[in-house]
Length: 115
Image (cartoon, rainbow, N blue to C red; front, side, top):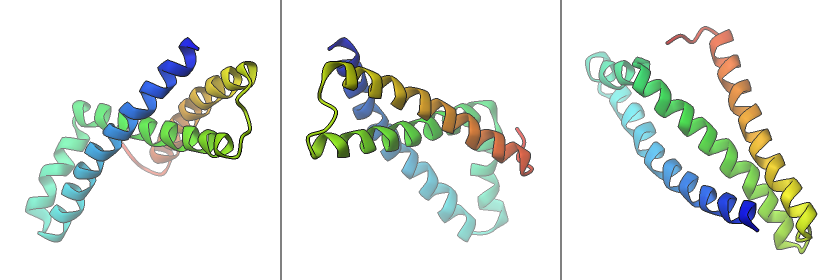
């Protein structure tokens, strides 16, 4: 029960993080439309180590929320409520979200991204 409570709270927190991250994404996109001078501001922020941590957190929040949403879809059809299954899928959601975050960042750096 403790794991389910923690994961439920984390789902809500990642939802909030995604909302705030969407505002940053909008800032980045809108600034691109205003030209290079304006665009350089969010670019500088996201290139800074603080911006990199924000992007890393946003990436994890996205993948965690996605994976846990898939888990909830199974719950919506009445599957996976057994305690052992719920614990297993909860751990799986965290592991897969971490793995996808690492994979996404590795691909990003492999394709030419840098700090």
